[in-house]
Image (cartoon, rainbow, N blue to C red; front, side, top):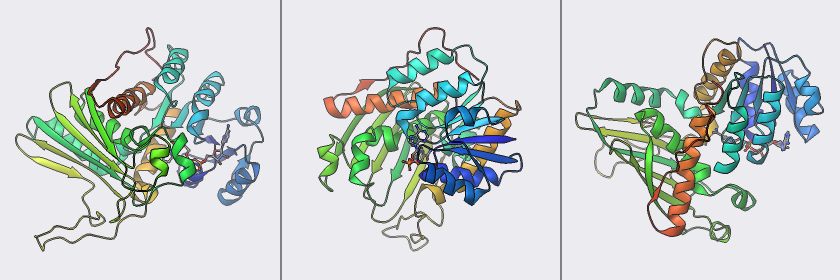
Amino acid sequence: MRIGLIGTGRIGAFHAATLVGLPAVSGIVVHDTDQRSARAIADRTGGEVAGDLDGLFGADLDGVVIASPTSTHAHLILAAHRAGLPTFCEKPVAGSLAETDAVLGALAGSDVPLHVGFQRRFDAGYQELREAVASGRLGWTHTLRACTADPTPPPPSYVPGSGGIFRDCSVHDYDIVRWVTGREVVEVYATGANRGEDFFAAADDVDTGVSVLTLDDGTLAVCTATRYNGAGYDVRLEVCGSKGSLVAGLTEHTPLTPAQSPARTAGTPYPGFMERFQDAYRAELTAFTELAAGLRTSPCTGHDARSALAVAEAATRSRLSGRPVRVETAVPAGSTGPR
Ligand SMILES: NC(=O)c1ccc[n+]([C@@H]2O[C@H](COP(=O)([O-])OP(=O)(O)OC[C@H]3O[C@@H](n4cnc5c(N)ncnc54)[C@H](O)[C@@H]3O)[C@@H](O)[C@H]2O)c1
């Protein structure tokens, strides 16, 4: 099949290389408002270049992957939908809940599928956690501890447009907590701190954030995120139940040193998310080709993405108000959304 790719920046270039390595993909057509970037990625991957969206959508495609900045997602999802193309869009659907609802409302009733990119759902560790919870072998869950830790902060210019640490980083934890447990988040209490550089506070953001989630069955989840994890990139989830506990992301690469036990020393950490989730990104895009071929339903719908964003918005409001915030779960009437 032929896949279009919109955006050839950091994650788009990575997806281009992954797509051309998939058995189901015979070719890619790339488009970027920065034509030199599109040309460079096309040359590197043997792809074609489309100079504009009409050229892209008219290029006999079977599906489209959107990897341009968040501010462009809503418009591009709707354009791809109008062109009748199965769509993979990097998270999020849109920067705000209101805009997300507008997109989901416009897609209501459509059978053009949408798959939103929360790649942890394709990581072997998180999949094992989900299976363990569903099978009941951990008993009833009482506590989840999630960690998303970047070794160094992003460039200062990135921070004001990032949506803040809860929308930018913890949103992956919110999605995976929902997916692993099969439960909804009903309340969030969040706080944050700035002990690093000044540009986080200048953007009304924090460099470290903690959110406490209450799930609809009473399970509590603590999600921690920081931009300054000197030990290295660290993404984990511990699920603790009445019969047992299990952790995803505790491997030979985890930059965590026990204070006492000699049984384990910190490993060489992954440099970042691309290396940590390389297999998951490949499995995710493989799933998208299956979705585009009509072989499966969407593994992460627009409504899933909305639910994770609703938690992130509640966390942001909670940090600013200093109070717990109920999560806005209402979905616009009639928007059952695409599969
Ligand atoms: N799932 C994940 O793990 C993950 C990781 C990184 C980024 N992301 C998401 O991917 C998206 C892109 O992030 P990034 O870090 O690659 O950004 P980036 O800035 O590195 O790249 C964006 C690219 O899109 C191009 N572009 C801008 N406007 C465009 C438009 N209207 N049409 C076509 N191309 C356009 C830019 O020229 C640039 O090449 C963001 O929404 C981000 O949230 C997800």
